[in-house]
Image 1 (cartoon, rainbow, N blue to C red):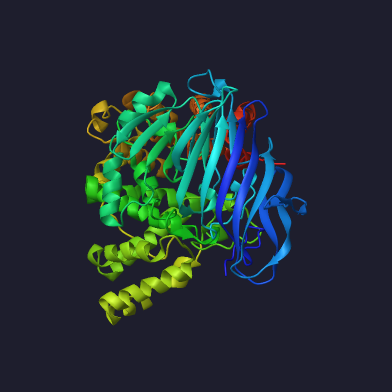
Image 2 (image 1 turned 90 degrees about the horizontal axis):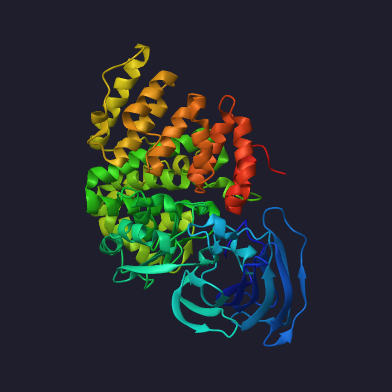
Length: 611
């Protein structure tokens, strides 16, 4: 029986198999209005009602086969929204099916939708809409069983004045008399509600592979097509490692700068941040990550958000396998070193005893967004990396990872399901010896323990050695008033990722004197750098050192880049820096409309501005 502490739906009685959306996009009212048709099936006997998750949605009517149904919308739960209870007017026996149609509209408080004014886009001429439903925001866009334990297909007719794209395959479009167009979509592979996604704007597409188109505003299309040209290689490498790609299309949508994440693995149409457009293809690892989600998360899905690591830990593991095959093992291990630093920072922010630092946290009564950090990603990866080494290496573990996808494709699973199959696979294919090794794993420490992982994995640091060496050179120079041994040649041979690691190493030192930071900037041109990952690390070093000369640069970057990894971290660090709190709050207040609702809520909490 499905368990989800973050859903109010009667998941133990009913499951949704398909949703059909008929929605009109209204940029003036900033609403989606129309209907959702839900194909439901009773999974218990004597089912007389359907309870759905909603949040800030206006319900107009509910019908069953055209006949009106009674419904009630409960008072709003602060975190989980308003339960919509529908009286079915008859009793369903286990296995009985029905089609319920809900006429509704979203409201301006919808947390899944961000409506951009033309001034917030690249082209400055047309409005733009995009959605972000993970973790529990689909319920603010469509009444549904908003739980990853429910996997369904969906179709949609979207009437809009500008091009619409979705996490589904386009099936046609019809021009309407009023100048709008109805765009039609179908998603035939079962998926959870958090992967329903829509974007509407002045969009242009460019083919970048046999099953891939990149979509973006026309002003960015050339840069985006160039940046993501290796997409097909990533997909093929994933297929070689796992199973055939199941979703038909793998398109990319490069969003405006307010998109709150690096990427979102919406099926058939990955959403990505424009911060990846570094001009040197150095940040496309994010695409490898989102492609890995096609199997880990989208095909095999966490049962609820307490087991989120099954989505993200596996995805990071596969992402680094893909990178290792395409760029060499040392690059994959280098990525793991960077990820380890992110995990350390997350543990420090929460505190090593905080329950959200556990791989399998308890989220009863919690908002899953509050538990979002690098922990499920990197601690999950570290567990799988450790298990691979412990059990005998890739030749043992990679066949298991492929079998994991084959076993659980189309299903939602929890950590116990995962662990039971791991044991059975190892016993069946390699015998008692591997079972004995699994029995030596400290499962309690790995899964329930807080703080850092119980095992400190060692990664190949070949590419990190030069970064560490240069960092030590700067550390040793801190007592010299005007060091002369540094020059641009220091980092001339560094890859962009090595520059990131060099700056991360510097950030781990006691803060350098402001005169040294000024010299470092003059020597390496860090303030002018285009690569957002490098710029972010440089800004964090300056904030740690209370280098007030850089505060305006930080505020400018944080107000033009809505990716939470950057804007949230920078505004939080600026708020905590000496004389920075007022600027952090003023920057956020001035640009609040720029940030996605999810990001704005989190930043407001960080800055002590939450209601």
